[in-house]
Image 1: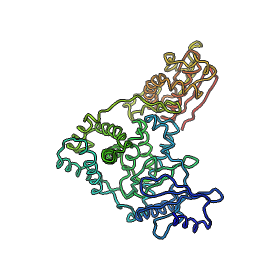
Image 2: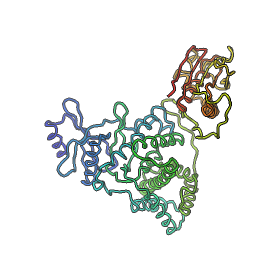
Image 3: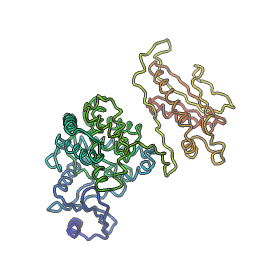
Image 4: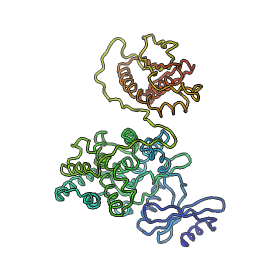
Amino acid sequence: MQKLTKLYVDYKGEEPVNIEKLPGAGSNRQYYRFVDKDGGTIIGVVGTSRDENHAFIYLDNHFSMRKLPVPKVLAVSNDELRYLQTDLGNSSLFDAINGGREADGRYNQKEQQLLVKTIRELPKIQIEGARELDWANCYPQPEFDKEGVLFDLNYFKYCFLKATGLDFHELKLEANFRMFAKDLTSEDCDSFLYRDFQARNIMLDENDNPYFIDFQGGRKGPYYYDVASFLWQASAKYSFKLRRKLVYEYYDSLKNYTEVPSERHFVDRLSLFVLFRTLQVLGAYGFRGYFERKKHFLDSIPPAMDNLRELLKLNPNIFPYPYMMDMLKKLTEMPQFSHIEEPAHNRADGYKITDSNVYVAHSQDGPATFSSYDDKGPLVVNVNSFSFRKGIPDDPSGNGGGYVFDCRSTHNPGRYEPYKKLTGLDEPVIRFLEDDGEILTFLDEVYKLADHHVMRYIQRGFTNLMFSFGCTGGQHRSVYSAQHLAEHIHEKFGIEVHVNHREQNIQQILQKK
């Protein structure tokens, strides 16, 4: 500590006003926050491994030169066991999305936006960070290779699989492990494999921009690994829909930095790394849980096994390792790993979460047919809310109307005094409807029907389509439904949408993208 303080004094030219010890990370390094007389802060780090510290310092300097979002190393001791770096504060992505994690994966919109922003930044450090990087400085090895893969697979075998008591043929499993390792390392990839890309290692600035830390274990390797590591982390409990969305966001961002494989190839390769990462973490959970008896790791085994069950449902052609896959299937069927369906936990903030884009339209709905009305375009969609007491809205296009949906079967917030003067655009009403849940089930089917209809109208070059939602007063349920369908169509298809909440005298135009 004295040597670290001296390094600070040599760098700043003054003594610190205060020194605060910070919680440790995954390694044996110790972190301190130095505070100067003006309130400015610098982080001091003491490590036990020169090679580990050297890897971080080299990578950090390299990434900083390439203007990547990382802390900047300010001063380093001669033996590289101590260094100073800029302070990124205390706000991590892990803490920022805690509400969704504790609610069993029911992430609100802000949390989802943070995840999207983070996953879209990942290709930048993977591809830009790899340019002109001297891999010899990486620790503990410069490249993701077959030997490293086999080490991790055997770690799973000895620390988890054998501890379960499952009977298996070791030589047959080893043969499949070698095939698996060969496939994982078969694709030539000149990208930076972060290796420990997780929410705890992402810091957020005051504008919620992500900054990357703890990348000292990185090496040359395939970019699929980090996506699998981040999105299939068992404790995060990301839903299938959210995970699929984040995979798409990553793939779309990756196009900005390098030539990408086809979507099918990308998804198939990613599935291999998801399986590998799942076996990796089960090995770690087995050692820390079964042997060290740490409850957190024992509690992490059931969600990891659920991830494994989902992988086993995929096309078997993706995993051409028959003995290994059969063994994993038997593993998931063992009594101690029986899946127990638990009731969903409510979010601490009271929000109920649903994806705004529930259905992904099929890329082709079949060959278009033609008539004298085709190919006029572009399509404009009109979405109305109304009161059935005042009649169904007219169709200004002259086509005679479109879909009319009756929202009166769903729970009516207008029956309760706190909501009587509010509308379906107000947050308390939105929260009431989404917590109740009936409106979400109702809209699921509406979205499915609307998606297909809008797609066909676009294909045929039609110019007008109308959706109308009615309820008793045209104030709560119909307004909520109309607004959400309008935003759904606009977000998904990018076309012009006109919104008319007739009884509220509110009009809005969502412009074509």
